[in-house]
Length: 290
Image (cartoon, rainbow, N blue to C red; front, side, top):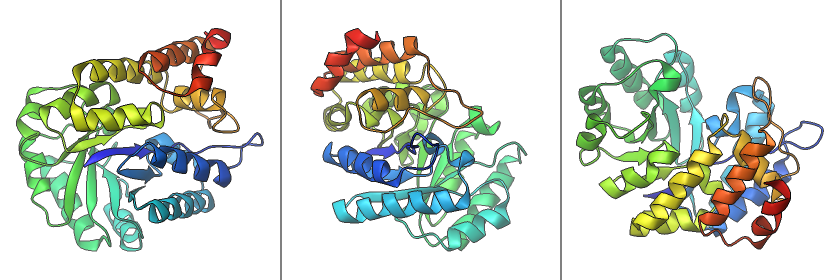
């Protein structure tokens, strides 16, 4: 339960993965009271990292989680069931975040069979990432229930683009973690297990507080912050804010992503200040950037 942060991957000014910056960032987020960290999620630009870089990210985030007693999840798997099963068989983590197969659009039965095969092969429990606007495949409520019943599936990162009827029905039946940051406060209020929220790189303590209290004012402020942070493709605005705060060495992302524009950065900084974040350096920079 609680807030889990899918960490960005910091790059140095030469475009290389900066393991030192990643480790510092992981500790900073841990200081905010989160329940866990996620390595190599979408927010980490995992699709644009080579295998050696992925190994550095896994080792770094895993070490921090062990040192701080946090739940350690790794983004893994893929569309090819056999290849995903082989990857999961050798994974060293507390859980794997595995998305619904993308692009090929299998049947609902095919998705269930995919996760049955992965659960049999995996060395760790699975958190199923249900995000139809990325995968091109929407799961029915009945399919979610069938997947939840698979031995080895421990939860769902639920990111369906809103709070629809199926979400309302499922939140009390299966272990859902909010995966759309803008809707995370609402889903937490409905009784979600927690949230896997990239926005919680920022105002981390406020996100942790929200998961405990479901305070409406806090939820509204954090929803506005999330909307500002996702005004451009994830994680571009988050990286821009972290860079301005001096927490990572550059705001750079890898193509086909482009760095966030200054208007989006200014809007995000103002939303961060309004959220009640306590970082004094953020407030000092708002006027310079806005």
